[in-house]
Image 1 (cartoon, rainbow, N blue to C red):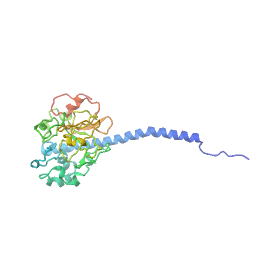
Image 2: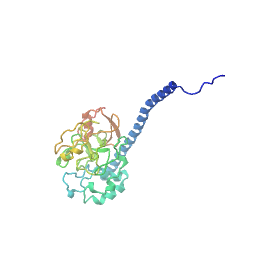
Image 3: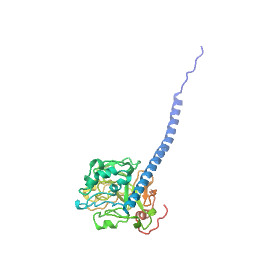
Image 4: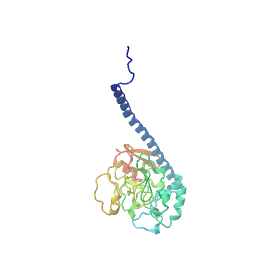
Length: 305
């Protein structure tokens, strides 16, 4: 009698096939992740481009950029309402969010922004969210917190409730009324918006658009792009809410605020310049060059990076 050989894989053949598939998957996965990140970066670029256009439309309407934060003093001062309001709120009608603006408008003359309609404050506006940030679209203690901040200064953002606020070198700060003619260095050489990463900590208020108490909606360039330095906070009471990327250190009352450019994009962060163009700033950019980009009228030459 003849015997028929059974068809199928041997154990060795099966292990070889599994190994080959594993190698192929390991080669393919990084490519898939890179493709996804490229798509997210394109979407982030589009968000920042739309914000630049919206800001220019605001300027065309009112002949200046909006106030960085209307008051934001540590003390509640209802005589200067809309207290704690930020540039984000002023920009809402120009990013197709007129309904949100109209809902809170009746409250602007009588109360602080962090007490306005909760449904509006907690509404996530997708155009202000970087899709690469795993914590993007966060709703914090006062409401929606975004990934795009406005350029305040090349120095530490200190003494937000004093005359020194008006001396900041960027485009947005407490009581600011900057217009295009004030940008002496040229709109292509001056930053308007930049990215930050949201904090996983529940009470951290970086990117807070609804309570401009200590310039939470603005960045400075005292630190480099994606700096591992921690964010300073304005008082000892808020020190526990700081998002620290390094070890804990004491923060004394009256400390300054310093929110640097950070992003979840590998190698750098996206920015919008004052002319509305969007570009990618690498982590390797010279700090002096970065600070020159943040200063609207220092007269310094921007070198290549």
